[in-house]
Image 1: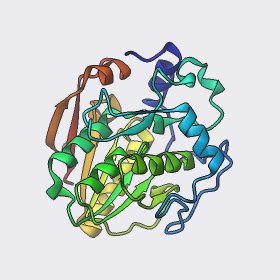
Image 2: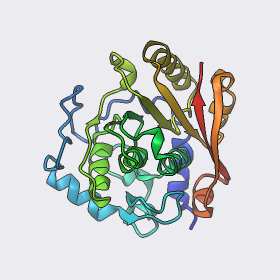
Image 3: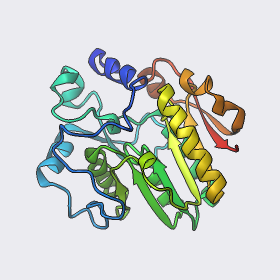
Length: 266
């Protein structure tokens, strides 16, 4: 089913929104947590009960219409009240985590189909959103995972999504990775993050540092947004896999038909 006009406008804005990664989340009332001190570590017992109830009431558990039917997620769907409400009535920060974006779908499908990419390795998922790619890494045998999203509500949603898939929640960091000292990771994954030119430039430099300092492997998922396909990073990419998007995902993303996994090789 296509997005309602209200949420179609939201997702269109989200695909072109400036500075989302860098935006401090104020409206939710939750703090940002420093490296290694995320409250969503382990069992999920640190979930705020009121927010947990809000998320459970206003999202639907679904595995339909994506590239990864193995993964269940809490998302905004036509069965949800806020799907039909004006977007400005949503009482918290914009729920980018409540959409399963096509770049993340491609990355998640690739990791599930190619578990050797992550098995026994450390994985950082930047801009994790609903957490699907980090969940796919966990399902495929990753040894250590950190999901990064600046929105603390996304952190709670990721924890709930881990539980839906019978996984112990992994650590979640709700600070801007680009502002922190880099750490060593075997693999960095990021989907749908090249939606703004300035952010793309910052990510490009950060990823180059990861590669040259730690020899980190980098995989990027993107459905062909102009901010990505027109960026200079294109000269440093190798196509790993391309997927035809399911019809529901096409309808929700302005007719995009495919999503590709790229390896960054500067």
